[in-house]
Length: 83
Image (cartoon, rainbow, N blue to C red):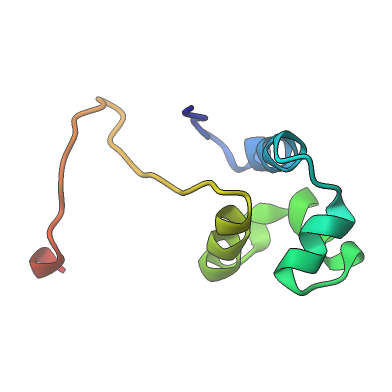
């Protein structure tokens, strides 16, 4: 299922929804991430302030991924060699 995020303000609700869909409480997810429930609550409330690495770890724990595509929805592939 795709969940487009257009503004950073949409991220907290999306993360909360993914967590709930996984049947996890904040405490349970925090344990999986090796952080306190309070730290997780801050992360869920302000994910735009998190590093990409931390957000990536959170998404993996939720069995989700970050996908970037152009707004015209063209499927483009960037090879490792292009970097």
